[in-house]
Image 1 (cartoon, rainbow over the protein chains, first blue to last red):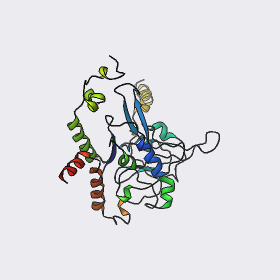
Image 2 (cartoon, helix red, strand yellow; image 1 turned 90 degrees about the vertical axis):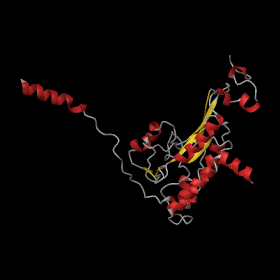
Image 3 (cartoon, rainbow over the protein chains, first blue to last red; image 1 turned 30 degrees about the vertical axis):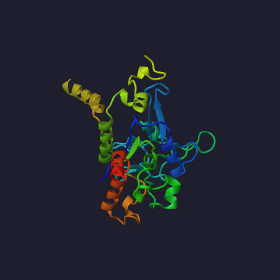
Length: 206
Length: 71
């Protein structure tokens, strides 16, 4: 039984937003709903890091624990999905989620909220696999087609990895062992040789 | 006196136990099809998992570079 997870390699992410764009395009996600987004720490400063964030399909999912209508379920591959026909758009899951994954379409005036929408790990929802109804409510079901999430497969630097946890952690481990660790693997020195000190890089602070 | 103290203590401590909050919650929605129940895999779980594992390795460019060198 697989345990589907995402890993975002902060050393590789170049904040291109390709993952967010791929997700939007793949599932025709409506305006104002962002199933995946980029978070950058220390933006503009040498040593900045970006990571791509979406639903992390938690093993002990807080959204699932707080949902008053029990609309969440976990697939055989440990992907956390929900039934939109049952969701009442209360927003409890949004407050419970540490990643800000649940999104709510703004339907009309007075701040009305629609039903919750979130990353499905490209696994659709509780409708017939690859049916028009499933696409309309949850987006495309790539997992049923034997494919991995579009965001990870589209990632140009392969910073975002998706798949069975032992498989992607092995890929990540190989990568880290090959490149080493520390500040010398980032930026100028890595790309063009030269000094590996952050303070020697253009714009670096001593 | 003693029974009264015991009763008071029982009342005071009545709220001190922990209610389990991690009890498995039931799912109240519609049942979902298995991912491998589609026409592509026809219920073959092994074939489905093999397809996903092979697909995951396409994210490993160290393997891809090695394959290119051997061509």
